[in-house]
Figure 1 (cartoon, rainbow, N blue to C red):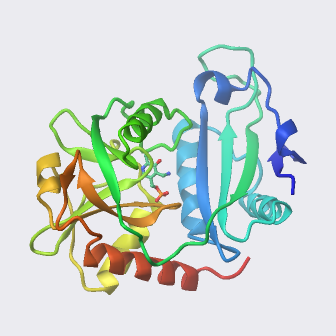
Figure 2: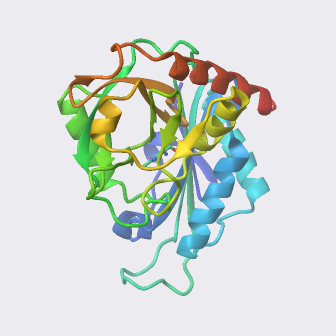
Length: 286
Ligand code: PMP
């Protein structure tokens, strides 16, 4: 089955989907994006993702390419045309096409690209857990804006893969973990407190992070928002990561040091199962 992409008002074969060479997304990473998981035909946490898109666009003073309700229809149509029942929908808005110049163009129209692809349905069983490595956080100072400028994260993820790890946790100049390259970072202390870095300019406000906070409250688990060091994480009872496409994924080693007993922790397992249940229950069928 051939894939279809949406590009500025048209559904086109994926292999023929194009934007102009002077699109500012291509030249300056002057673009923002979102990824929403699709599970059993449902869009998980769609509205919070669209709210975050709105915030990213406002921070960069890019207009909405089409109205929010129209975008929702395009997301559904792209998912439908690609026959995605489980997987993800990716959408990106750039400032548009203009003669290359750093300052904002006066009359560019924002470009919108949407793609969708299938993936395995989410399983409450987390499997054996994953390894992470740590890398210095070399990204710019506004990673709270979800831009397509992802080279810092791409270099970190590549290093992780080369070392047989799944994710890289990025570390600030004070030795404290900011977040993964494409996920938020969490630990569980000996007192069974969940610890994750507070929202600020140094991390992306993950939608999964936000939903997991609510799920934790429902399970009567305490969440403490404060930075933590790599050493604290290595000595923690549990560690895990959250993102729209990995849900809650337990971490069993950090820079080669085993976390806990080297198996997914009970709290991460419970959070994953409960997150998937809660998010599906809260999301009507599309
Ligand atoms: N941090 C970064 C840097 C990310 O790229 C992502 C995934 N987009 C996340 C955190 C997790 O965010 P979400 O839960 O909204 O997918």
